[in-house]
Image (tube, rainbow, N blue to C red; front, top):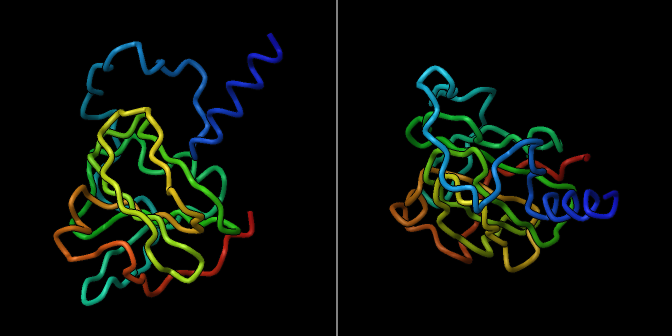
Length: 168
């Protein structure tokens, strides 16, 4: 039993967010949508900073602790226009994200320590499969699905305004 629990924990952490106790398995079917009052509003839940992608600005909340990164954009009703979340890590390595309890269709841009985008991918609500950076990344930026494509942001583009590495 102990080995199984450790294996599940390691697999969950490798996805970028630890699985919650009692969370449905990917094969349990799609859960019913939460009641309106059960989701957080689309407005930012904390301070934001501007990130610049060429001529375009995305205002992002920063997730730079393990707890903030695990929560991410879970339980949100949506995102305000031109808003998203920046995940900051202490160093570059392969990163994986999933959409457990995330009801918003998102696009994710993974970036290296210099702010150069190494991968952009779309992620579907509640999809518990892992989306990998495919190359070492220190940052991940989540925005409304299609935001990067609509603004001409592509692999190789640079993100300006990134903070330094996370301390944890």
